[in-house]
Image 1: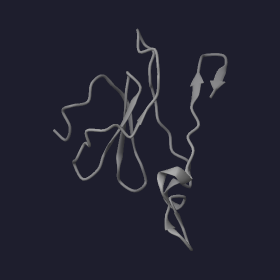
Image 2: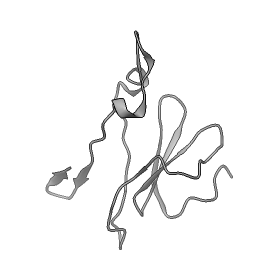
Image 3: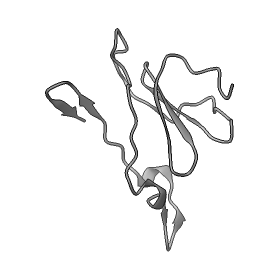
Image 4: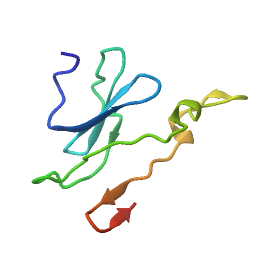
Length: 96
């Protein structure tokens, strides 16, 4: 077992750099790297986790592996990035 402290996982995906991103229904996005789960979530969003709702998926930009650094400045800090959260329903979406 890599991480036993993940409550109600709903989805997961490997980033091109090898990190495993795991969604929790309560709105936390957790990251496992080198078999380590940090105590602090990578991202937390306010959700209604009742029933089949909550944080239900994660997807990566196709150029994710090459977008985390700059040839002149090297690795970019988290403040250099922005997140787009889109809530999908069967017939419409709600971008935030």
